[in-house]
Image (cartoon, rainbow, N blue to C red; front, side, top):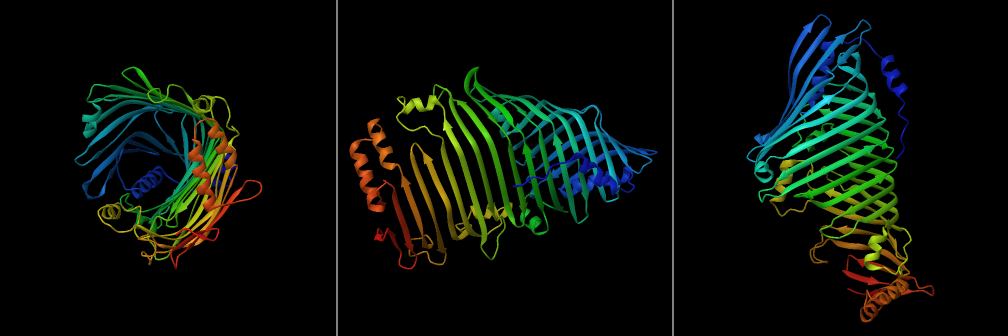
Length: 512
């Protein structure tokens, strides 16, 4: 994935060049239009005094369909001031509380309070009525959690929990634009210099055990961009229709690095801890009627995990680089849709403490490992997997949710402890024939599998006492029945499946 540089000069100058006049009333209408499109009912006390509009006690309420629950946010106050140049200055109090909570009918709910500190906050709105761009700049943004209350089932299980925590972001700049009527659109670009959070949570179980968890993290510079389209009347419980009406989300980010740590205790005794450090990270998300698309990459990932109740020593893992991508349909269709998944882990290593548990003498090769899974498929969904009512109906039925008509193995590879396994191939599936393979779609195609270094690895495992000699001999015999071995000790096999006859063969030898 390629990332265009997020130039703050470009953020600022382009929208201003196209600016016309807006008033505080235009800006407030633009804000509420966006929230209404997301299904929120917005209320507030609005007072006007000349060119100044004061909006107090802003509340956004979301009601779930069929009276299944609700969620609301109390967002505090703001002041909008019209200026002589046709722009509007938006100001927030230097410090104010925001509360949010939700409830599921018959289950219970929660409410939480967060204090926001935004000194020197500055946002300028430009544009024209119905099309407003907001340029923002914050030296610091601090959020502090000050309370949490539970009701219903959650309160019975967790009693009165306590939550503490702070989040701090520095050097935030960027803009977001909101426009459109039937389909409300938003475009966002932004950067952040640094970020950090420190969260703590504790509760007492019905058995009297007190469990605590702390989470801390620091983040490097980050840049992100997003494009969103929301049809009016969108319901989170029926996203299938919303997608067909134009719902779309596209998001990209790039983060210079992060360090994090998590610790858990029970009655004051350590239950476990986990820490991680990683370098440059980037990713993207796309969600529309065309499907769900995800990409991601991370460099220099290192993790240490300690679970004293399971293993009495810390375990370390590291990955030089990892990347992945996935694309899949989310809506039902008449035709099969291309899908894809790829996972690639390069330079995978484990720490000496874990090696020492099963190979203290260092007999196994400890070179960095690689794992690759790269596969394609053609999938026809028979239901909308983003529609709540269809998901509930599917759970209570025996219907098949999807049909897969093709599977391609671009690459499957495992290279570790001196052995190298590789597989490629492709298959077609006939979903109208469920008899040839006993309930599974009739499959036709072939795959090639090669295995290097197997004999040497097996000999080492025998010498370590991990594999008995008789079991090793059986493994060699079984592998010899499916694969051919060349002069260099590489095993290879071509697995062929005949969907018409139901036969399966390996290197021309029938095995079914």
